Length: 143
Length: 122
Image 1 (cartoon, chains in turn blue, red):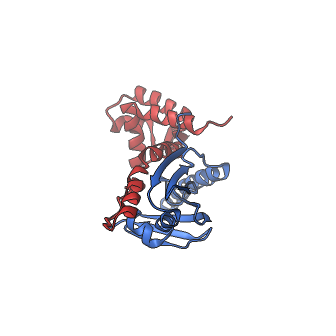
Image 2 (tube, chains in turn brown, red; image 1 turned 90 degrees about the vertical axis):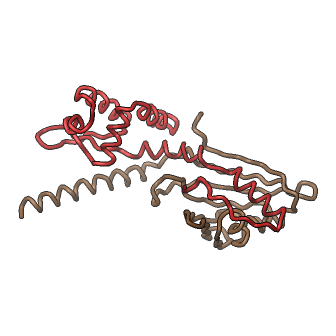
Image 3 (cartoon, chains in turn blue, purple; image 1 turned 60 degrees about the horizontal axis):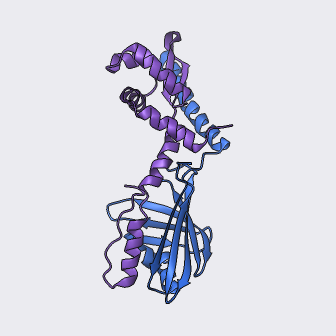
């Protein structure tokens, strides 16, 4: 399959997992190396937000939190409408490697398709607009 | 079997590879539903060619046909397949190398430059 569903990177860091964990999961860390500002409610289901000066704001949802080895969150897929339910899942895995850390990041879910319910909701909405506009035309014609 | 993401994306990119079809889709996106006659009046494309392209676009579910005025078929952009193609592009523009490099710098030194804006929302 050519459609990329998954992106994976691994890097070796010269710092112990505890330090890497703090950089990944605190507002101070995320707001320094990743975004320009960040907030995070670090618990599964908690929300997090990163923003860039003069740029976008991204809303994330914490999904997994197993200190100091696994940190996972979902965030929106770039370019899809804001209310689209499709999101990609990002998972950081930290493994001790000597005195440092082997950090793996996997982002997956790019190839997911909207489920039937979503397709129906979407088309229903488009039909709804066409009907509303038709009713407006009738209303104006009758006036 | 319903089409998979790969098949849908392939249809979208094949449709977009042709300049006439791009013009038709762009016109429907910017000005809303239109008949083949409307499109022929607005675009430098013959009505015959427009009808042929619309049939192909409808086949790929990129436009939907609906009854219009005076028993003419009117075409409306169907954006769901474009959103699937958008996911493909989203994977290509995602840059993890930049942020991971910034993380490494952040851990290594006291110099704390701002993070790079990810391709996420630019």
